[in-house]
Image (cartoon, rainbow over all chains, first blue to last red; front, side, top):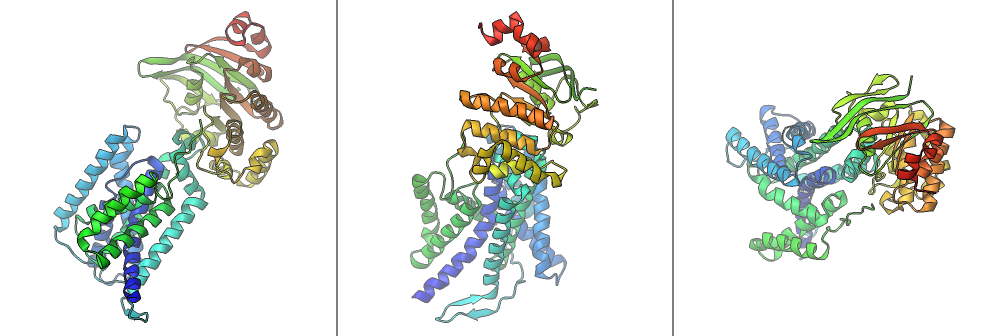
Length: 294
Length: 238
């Protein structure tokens, strides 16, 4: 009984790690330019395919090279998307930007479908995946542990980057006052590009981890993207800690619902949780009410 | 050569002309005040100098060189710091982090600790509250943070937009005293936009009066303070 529960929590941690890697991109972009980047789920999908193509084209590419390389390539794609689709609209009404983001998402899904076909594929196992018996009947594979640990490490690095470096400080300042940031000598385009690069790189890691554990297809970003977006909102969009907490919470609720109730109830309970939480805390768990003195 | 010279500067918002070709000249080490009513174009002039606004005509010279091709984020590294209207502090960052961002374009990294010490000496309140979020400071404290942050850029010219706006009389006095101190001790040149003409003329060496996009008067602060038109429109009868 307890063994099953622990087993389920480990599964939840793996799913939560993937959600968190995506949710961080939503929250970072929102945190700087107040845009819900609805194409972000599709960047996660792209990241999975970039990883898939890398291992297909270069057989024997070590995973320790493949993941960073795929993250880098996807980061550049993210920067390009911002440059081409969003930059010109930065001062336009919010709605134009949101519609554009939805359009970019549909474009990416169909582009990948045309290029590689609609079928689901699995990224061949790259991480070591011996089965470890933890005692009491709890079983875990090495890759699961690695996914959780690498994700947590990426989150810690991101937290340090955003909260302890000058570039990170500038990122946080952009949302507060775009004019004043530039008056400090900060190149706004550079900061926003960095935000997209970092968010896309994390999503790519998530895409690869997901593609190894399950499978990838051109539309995987829709479902996972929405879930991660919900996780970011539950945690308090704009907050890094919030995105991580929201992701693990959502994954926990989903996995436990499937295990103990019914898989049919999974989405209903996840979205229900969102509604209830937002009724109690409209700004999310870690969200602050807008703090501005005039 | 003047440190800052504005020649025939024109700025429009769509069809509306905000500045119709104004000339300003500021010598190194001066405090120059730019007076005028609401909507006269004072803020527009500062935003044009720091390149936040595109200009339609004229030229802006810093130490004799045109800066109209410099991007917004390049202006501060030339030595021009702009404290915008409403102070422009970053409310969700701490006091320390606000000051740190002021050093972004400061190329003399070795000078930063001294600058910080100087800021804390002039504004002891900022040191007391350095780990506090700027959004939780009072209006006067936020203005001090904005001035301190501008000092961190190691600038030679400060553009100050209504530093006394919305402050209690006590803080207004304090802000003007500090501006004078920065000018006197660091030799920082200051272009001061103010509605509080009384106080501005007390600390400034010279002044310009802006009316609906045109300079209508200029002179030393003393002359301006005694000019009947200035008395009538900006100082009130005393």
